[in-house]
Amino acid sequence: MASFNCLIMGAAGRDFHEFQTFFRNHPEYHVRAFTAAQIPFIDSRVFPKALAGPNYEDDILIFSESKLPELIKEFDIDFVFLAYSDLSHVEVMHKASFVQACGASFVLLGPRHTQLESTKPVIAITAVRTGAGKSPLSQMLARHLSDRGHRVGIIRHPMPYGDLTRQIVQRLASDDDLDRFECTVEEREEYEPYIEQGLVVFAGVDYRQILSQAELESDVILWDGGNNDFSFIKPSLSIVVVDALRPGHETTFYPGETNLRSADILVINKVREANVELLDELRERIALLNPTAEVIESDLEIEVDRPEAIERRRVLVVEDGPTLTHGGMTYGAGTIAARQNNAAELIDPREFAVGSVAQTLNDYPHLHAVLPAVGYSAAQCDDLRKTIEKCGAEVVIDASPARLDRVLNLSTPVVRVSYRFIQISGRSVTEMIDRLLER
View 1 (cartoon, rainbow, N blue to C red):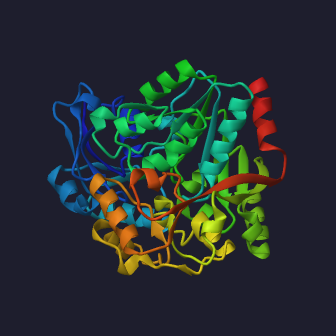
View 2 (spheres, rainbow, N blue to C red; view 1 turned 90 degrees about the horizontal axis):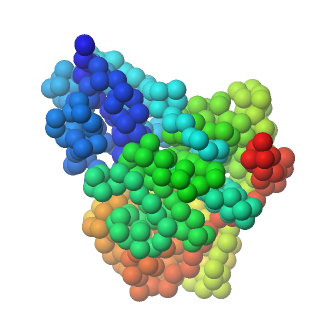
């Protein structure tokens, strides 16, 4: 059988899933290497041969994406597969052009070759951009389904940033599980809100095994997507969140437009703060691109556990990391809470940042009086803690769901801030889900 040398460009998520679902089934496409981007500290690992299957005698090396031209030459690469998300269409085509200039072909795999099928109903919540507000919606729907007596299996888009052999299947039901799997701040942000509801989250590397285990414990599967990626599991109902504060992004970022065009329900979120004219244009645009989708509109309500602690204080706002970094947002719930509750000052952390946190702020110059909750390693968590302490804030506003007061053992008082999903118009999303499950 002819064999093509392949390279997968990834970010520790879809890249491993595509290997498991496509490349293991097509041995004529032989993966010689992975590259890594977006996430720090993930380009010095290997994809273990234990996960690669019988056609691989050795671990597959993972390199920085910056080494792409040398790798194409060294391994005589025929095909480069792009397998990560939240990239502008222009950026995707720049990568394609670069790969082709090096002599290789550029490939994007779609749902038919990568989505798994479940024996249970699957509700998939995805978005057109990171930070659109899918997590508050997902958490609300999980709570609703649980209250209706359904056993809900939460399957989360992968974040395997550690030892892949220990993260093949992660079943997370308690804080002890978060510690046992050495979850990063970014993982805790996504898992902890469900665990606090008494729900179980499944994640890891091998989503065929993950789905099988979730099906044993669940009546319905809820896919909680990452970035703007499309679901790893074929949905019975696809719900896609569109950000009214970033009109135009729904058609200019990959693979968010894929989600937009294939959605059963489109949720236009954050409508209260949106520009009226741009919101009308957004409605017209999505009606043109997906005329059969049910469209609802919604907003996010800020919840603060101790609002009185913010007033007239010098505060440091810590927001969800990916939303601010590759998501491109300049603020989030923490900044809004600080302004609504009359903070005396929002501290700019840039002059106080240390180590890898300083590097992150340098890499994302659009960030000013806000600190992204980056903590992809123990060392980076320590850099984050040192940065927070050096800022000298009277209060830390923690708008990352990761419970930084627990993870970092901060001496500064912490106020927790979160979003709550509120539907404003359209047919009730919970009623539509209830009807689906009744059928």
